[in-house]
Length: 347
Ligand SMILES: [Zn+2]
Image (cartoon, rainbow, N blue to C red; front, side, top):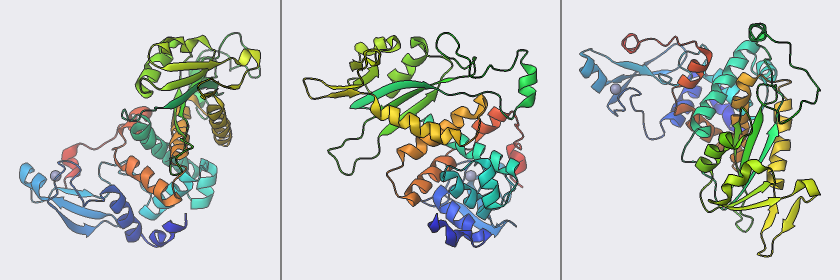
C-alpha cells in the first residue's frame, strides 16, 4: 500500500491519481465520449470539473459540466477522494467492514456500503466479462458455502419458515434454498514450463443447485472447446465428453491423482487448494448473507487471478475495472434507484 501514501496527502492529489486511472489516455466526456473537454474550477472536495464543448452545443447551453466521478460508482458518495483511496487499498488487503471502518476512521455502515460498491464493480465488469475463457488444462469442482440472511432481519421475518437448521445433515445435495448455496469452480492450471505464466486462472460461480442444467451453460461459455477437462466422477459432468478431453478421478475408491499413459496428471487438487483459500477469505466475514455471497466471491476471484502481479499493478487493474462501469448493478440490486435525470446533472 506504500505507493498510495503520496496521493493520500490531500483531496487534489487523490483526485488527480484516480483521474489518471480512469482516463489514462486523456479525459473524455462520460456522456458523448468526446475529447473536446475543458477543465473548469475544482469542486470543494478536490474533484476536477470539466465542460464538454460538444454536449453544450448539442443541448444549446453555455456549459455541459461533468466531474471526475460523473457516471462512476463514486458519483453519489459523500466520501472525499483520499478516503476512497484508503478504503480501496484496505479493500484489496481483503479486510472486512469492521476492520476497514477502524483503519480508515469511517462509520462501519459506510465501510460496508463501500465494499459492496467495489465488489459490485468487480462483479459486473471482471466476473461477467464474456471474453474471459479458460483453456488447455481445466479442473472443475463444486463446494458448498453456508450463507443465510445475515444482517437482513426483515428478510428473515418475511420468509415464513423456521430459521435454517444448523449442523443438521440434510438428505441429498445442498441448495441455496437449504441455506448452503453450491459454488462451481473452474480453474485453468498454471503453465509450469513458463516462468512468466500468470497465476492459475479461476472462475467461481454461486449456484442455486448443482444440476447439469444449471452448470452446463456456464461450462460451455467459460471453457474453450478441446481443452483437457478434469473432474471427479460426479455424474453432472458427463455431458462434457463431446466437447472436451474429459478425464475423471474416482474419489469414491480413494483415487485422488493419477498419471495417465500420455503423461497427463489427472486430479482436481488445484481447485481443492483454491477452495481452502476461499474458505479462509469468507470465514473472515463472520457469517455471510446469500445476497452478498456472489460479490465477495467475485472479489476473491479477481484478487486470486491477479495474485502474480505486483501490489500496485493489481490495485490499478482493479480500479480500471471499477471505473469501466457506472455502477448500475449495485443500484439495481439495492433498489435505491435515485439517480438524477441527465438534464439536472448539466447545471
Ligand atoms: Zn459530451
